[in-house]
Image 1 (cartoon, rainbow, N blue to C red):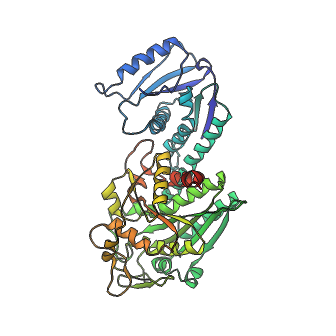
Image 2: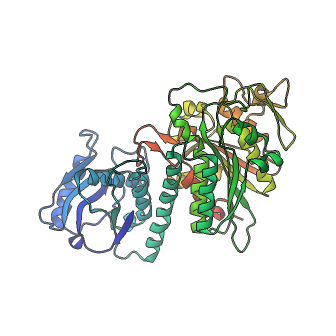
Image 3: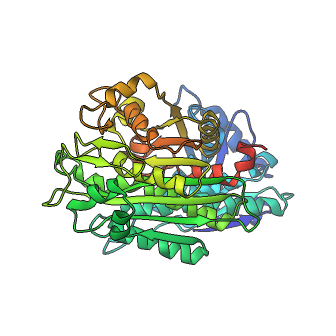
Length: 492
């Protein structure tokens, strides 16, 4: 998408659709036109709980260069902060423009306060107009241009901020593209190849573990979960290491089950097609390292992905199998549909070998998380309070919400097995928490760790805020903010 910055009078602006966002607490624009000011002032009175109106559109006949003005109000949208409403309303206007053939869309943010939100508006425009068109015979015509009308005295810093925030949107959309790919295309091998191409493009370090190397190094979870598929498992990493070195090493670990049938413990057929999205955790960390590779923060960051396809087959692992991991722990497989934690265990062990200081794993791990938190909050667990708090702050900076869940030691009783150190299921209740406790058993000593269960947020069943229905790219923006603003989240 082309994002143009315009700093001048509205009289000189050429736009088919001019977007105004009215907020009772903040003035986001300066019109410099008496007739327009009068009309907008009357509109502000119309927006109220009585009318339930959320938008008005009118044609300002006296402004020849502006076709239609559409005004939105935050009065009825007080569930979200102003910055999120700006992203939402601009996305809504861009869709309106696409539907009505108004190609030149501009948003007025030309007050000092409005210009501060210019970058977030750019991010919202990119995310809000996203559409996956790759496999359509006739791709839909999408909006590819928006003008940000900014304060005339805004300096060069605002343009840099727009470019940075734009990158957050691009990174989220990168992840959404991966999740949208069908599983017959995006196999573990191709996912690894995607990462290799990205690393090459951005001059990042890349390493891959093929099936033979995984077996040789004892990555038993990946080897056994992937054994039923004709597409062998992979583990791979993409790393950014600043030239000056870094005291800390942040590893972003992503679950990449490219399709999950449940294995021998096969899932019901309803909505199984969505299991192509069981690699959304891998997509999130790949989207994050894509942005990190371009922003180049003074922090060593690695995206580590564990990827397999979980299918039944002659060689598939079975309920009742016992897996012996590199750290000496054994796991009894009660159900092959609890496979994500089995491959993440390999990844967590590998994080220790990579000399990570901090690890954030991201996974579509439990349906129980979605049932507990709904579709707006991601489940967050961890044994490092500082890291958990930093993730929550980073998410707040980027419009992504997290809810901290406990890791009570008493619940470890639910993971006990008669034949192994651990069971891969924890019983009927507390499934999200017991999954987190299972993962914690494989976190190396001394390592700060947090776990994001994105099963509740990786896919929007209907449009929400500035997201269309479909993959959301959840956690990408949070992870990028965490890495780029590391010194603010963890001051020395």
